[in-house]
Amino acid sequence: MKLLDRYILREILGYALLGLGVFLFILMTPEVLRLSELLAQETVTWNQVGRLFLSVLPEKLTWAVPLSVLTGLLMGMSRLAADSEVIALHAVGVGQGRLLRPLLLFAVLGAGLTTLTTVWGGPWGARTLRALQAELAAGQVSYELQPRVFDERFPSRILYVQDTEQGGTRWRGVFLATVREPMNPTLTVAESALVLPDSAGRTLRLQLFNGSTHTYLGRATERYSVSSFAENILSLPLPTSATNLEVRRNAELGLRDLWATSQQGPAWRTVRADFHRRLALPASCLLFGLVALPMGMLAQRSGRAVGFVLAVATALAYYFIFLLGDRLGRQGDLWPGPGVWLANGVLLLAGLFVLSPASRWLTSTGWPRCLIACGRPGRPPRRGGPPPGPALLSLPRVTAPGRAGGACRARSMSTWSAESSSTSSCSSAPWS
Image (cartoon, rainbow, N blue to C red; front, top):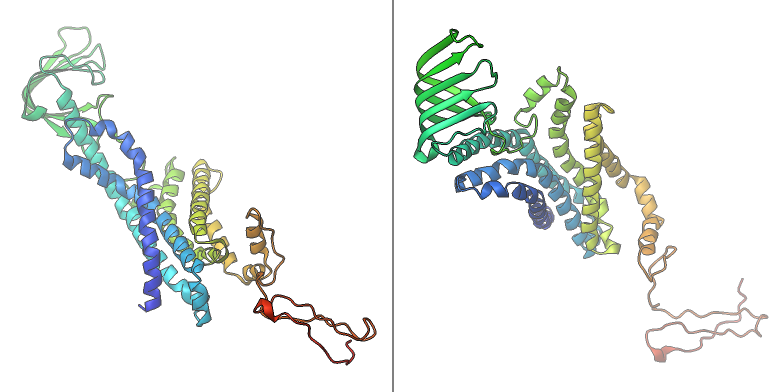
């Protein structure tokens, strides 16, 4: 890698890391507030807290990485343009295509990192969060269970435990009544039970030892059955007060599973939109690299702060168009593919335009400078031409003979010094 590429990449990387930290802080704040009650529980360990944040992190990186790539590219190029380093590079023969190479390289790296988070990190985080939800729910139920008290928190079930051991994960003297059907109740008694988390995170599994199940069939007392067991496993629905960590639908599926599921079924639009969503976000990094150079060049006249303003405006516009297209695709107003890729299509057209000869012709006519000057209070827009400044040469105004008695009058403009003002003479040759 050449020295110029390393210099530009180092400049961009600093702003990108700063943007990544800011965007992660903004995106993680709602998660911290939502899980604050969970983190305050005595049953949650530091290991579970770390796993919880790691499982949520890939979903947030899916958005934070593209936005940080955009911020780093625009603010880095704005800094170089504002300090006239881009002009110096152009003066020594470094063209626009040469400057675009490190920007696209950085965009490719950002696209690769985003692909890792959407294709592999997202499903891993969803599966980890689901397993952690089951583990926390089992721990919460065991912690809140009171021995020798009938517990009616479970839907359509009544639980009684004589005593608890091993931090509430092992029960002694278990009595469970299932009253889902009042005419056909079921009673289960066991000497002991072991609480097991469910990988799906929706139920609580009980491993019962040395017990029996009593079933009553209708009002007839003679229709009564008893079955004994040495070991049995029952699943209980979680109470409504148990831990409920929201996991987005289809988040646990990989790309192949998403594509196979989207081929049929009533919810195929939603699944197909999730499939295209995992590919559209990494592609946005490449498009951000395409528009970063011409947008960052605006800092030559507007200052380096324009990079931050353009980054925020572009991020908000892309986010709004992306969510709009995604929603239209899921509702059926658009096909899921074009709907999810709508924001990328708009960004691609914008990038091709700013790099086209038409954009350079508009810049040469002074149209962007006029808009920038109109937005500055107290500074009227200029019509074009070089910027105003003191003249370095005195030019006389000459009057042709016959118009003012053949004499030539010279009017002094600004000169090198105040003492150099004088009246110049001219020959009597005729002026046309």
